[in-house]
Figure 1 (cartoon, rainbow, N blue to C red):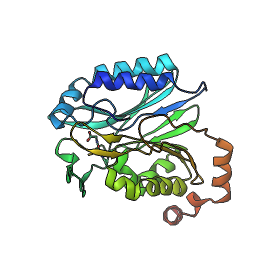
Figure 2: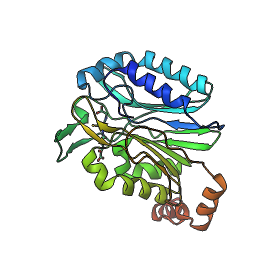
Figure 3: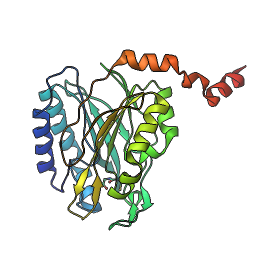
Length: 266
Ligand SMILES: O=C(O)CNC(=O)[C@H](CS)NC(=O)CCC(=O)C(=O)O
């Protein structure tokens, strides 16, 4: 998505894309980071956090209407004079199955027209690792900058994740340099599907995001990718293939930290 400041407009756009989905059940849909309000400034984001319940309700209805698992990441949710960057995962009946507050905040200097990103100035980091059961198996939640921290992905795998969703808004500059490599590395390391949905293009505040939404399988294959602009990228999850890869290359058992834990408990 190329989200703009107005939540109403962005939600309309979400519904537009939901109408184009292939006719498959069950289905998991992942939206990009800040899909409901982007490029409006920190104050607008904070104001949005005060309306989080309304946004939650609108997404509940969309998940139910289109009968999809819907990862709506991220929406600002209230936390005093700051907010959390929260991802919600809804089931096809509209019920919220889990929520995740972005842990790693993007306090980074980038050689682009924004230059300084200081996400922690207005957002509070989450502290919980979140994995949710679905008809596909277990879905782990991560967001954008989290992809640079393999430790989180390992914790998600330890908690049984088979698919990891990654709503994102990577910068054009860091995306061109690192996006596909990072997403693919996390998929191969943890032997999971990574469904990475990105913001794309130029936004109201002049920020430029990289896009290239993609689905990477547990072997590191790129199953689907959007080259340019907005749209849908879809792929099938194949649980037998995931099991075979984990069986053939049992990295979770070989991992030095797992071995250490075994020794420790002796
Ligand atoms: O600001 C908003 O409205 C929504 N949130 C974002 O765009 C976030 C925080 S600024 N972006 C990232 O985490 C980019 C990470 C990235 O680009 C990298 O790791 O290289």
